[in-house]
Amino acid sequence: MSLRWQLNLIVTGLLGLFASSLIGLQLGDTRRSVHEEVVGAHVVASQMLARMDFVYVHGGMEGMAAFLARIGRIRANELALYDAQGRLLYRSPPSRYKEGREAPQWYARIVSPPLQPTEIALPRGRIVLRPDASRATLDGWDNLQPMLWLVLAGFVVGNLLVYALVDRAMRPMRAVVQALGRVARGDYGTRLVAMPGREGQQIGEAFNSMAQSVQDSAQARRDAQQAGLALAQSRELTQVIQARIEQERGAIARELHDELGQQVTAIKSVGLAMARRAAGRDEAAEQSARLVMDCADRIYDGVHRLIGTLRPLALDRFGLDDALQDLVAEWRLQHPAVTVNWGREGQLDGLDDALSTAVYRLVQEAVNNALRHAQATRIDITVRAGRQTLEVDVADNGLGRLDGFELSGHYGVLGMRERVEGLGGRFALVQLEPAGIRVKAVLPRGGGSEGEAIEADAGR
Image 1 (cartoon, rainbow, N blue to C red):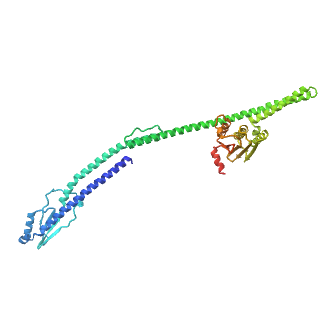
Image 2 (tube, rainbow, N blue to C red):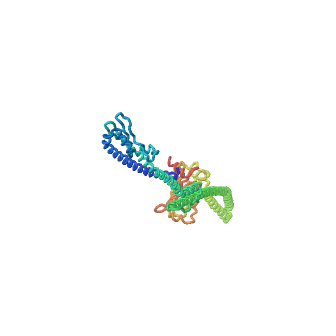
């Protein structure tokens, strides 16, 4: 049921209650008036007839009937004279006041007083005096009818007026409902025009503010979706680029190992042959040949280090665990003054190439930063392999500060973050006290997000 009809029913009920109260008051007044008139007339008639002994003494029953006939009708009473055998000798004529009309029976039952007839005993008969409230009741009914018509007219006019006023007052609400429907259908640019009244203005302002908030929220969601799509595409592109870079590095490393390594070996062999041939014959030629051999050794060592930087062959041949151990051994050899601790929890077997490469590059970049820029004397490397996640933790005691990483130019940290997030993982830098930086990364093993992988590991 609409609000308009509800308001109309409420007003109709109130009008009906008011009309019922008026009619009830009118009926009560009429009942009291009829009662007072009939009772008063009946008492007066009873007292008067009770004093008519002299008429009976002088005229007998015939004289009493003649006397009553001359009196006629007594107001609000009916007279009847009976002899000793119960025969009716006289009955008062009907009232000529509003002759031929009667009030409705239901109305008469409401306003007529419940009075009993009075009998006056005579020596050879009796007089019966019955109260008659029909004329007084009819007067009350005639007085009530104009009020009933007036109440009915007021009831109808009041309802029509209330219906029209409520309809007019509800027009802004219909506008609000229509505007809400447009918003529900996706038209977030819907706005309400200024509505009359203080409440209308408040409703309009509140609706327009809500619509603006919904529009802003929808736009923010669209922007977030576009940003998420762009981020996903960027991460996918990053993975493709990283994979392509690793492929190119591997190809270059293999080319250096296979081609340049053989050439350097050949140069060294030729130098050795020349040195042996010139031994004891030409000292200058022998020294030149040995110089060529030394240069070939240095070139070979440089190529070997370059191959390890480009693409560690141990990673492809023996897996992540052996590759990291070789990397740690090389750091210990190159930096004997730095304590490099290596720890592993869980098995690192069965990892895909992208994940193995990412972990290797993370450890490599983090340790190189600590060695080259932070002047660290202690580096702790820990790789924890869970059922669903792989956690990398590299901590140093160097001079690095987090606020320094916020400056531009730290492409190594940016590359680590992009590599981790490109695989759906989480990357963080933690400031250690009194000095040092901890690099933490959590990577999912296989499909799924990093959050799902962490929940799976937590439930083991």
